[in-house]
Length: 261
Image (cartoon, rainbow, N blue to C red; front, side):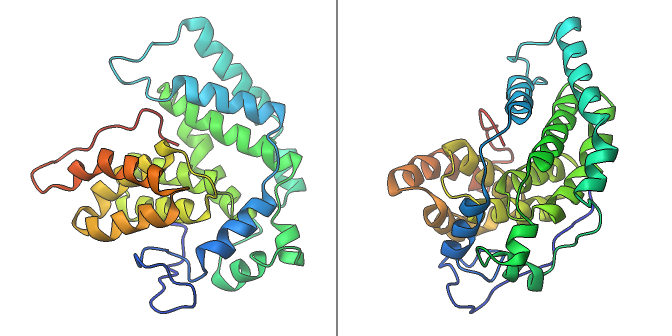
């Protein structure tokens, strides 16, 4: 079971509330995106390597997906184990487990340059921890038992440490939907969408995938949300066309996005 980390920041009439009503944080998208972009840093080499592994083996369970050789599985396990050895030291340096998410803290983090904003910023250490998190997801994709044991506790601590990194919310949504924690997945997917400055089509398709499971009767609001968070109207149109059939009452399962977050 995946614990639901998020305080319910439902917004009814807050300044800057989005037209869809689906922004889970009572802070305008403009403010969320500005803070998220200001905290973003270029990926380290180790994080790029972890993303490469994850994207390569994501969806391995699909019949059409290539399967890893024994050597390739061993490479994944070795890279993960090398990162895992650094966890105690990095967790201590980054004070993992000592932070929490609440609306008061989040509002302060959204003020670019504030002490709280700086304290929540990504570092070389948090990028290594994020790489370990991705390798936990990669091992999960490969049905390696230790993958979830790594990913589940680490993602909760990382979300508290760097709470405006949209990647983490996309990943939390993925972990939650796999555990059939649909409400938590939907909340996380929406948070990711409103924090993400330049979402890919597949990012928004994944949000639609989660919505079709957790909010199937809200297609009108979901469609508005996709227009609010898309980079442009053309992207919104593409994504809406791709996902709208999944919201028809007779459809019980949605397409699987080619590359979910």
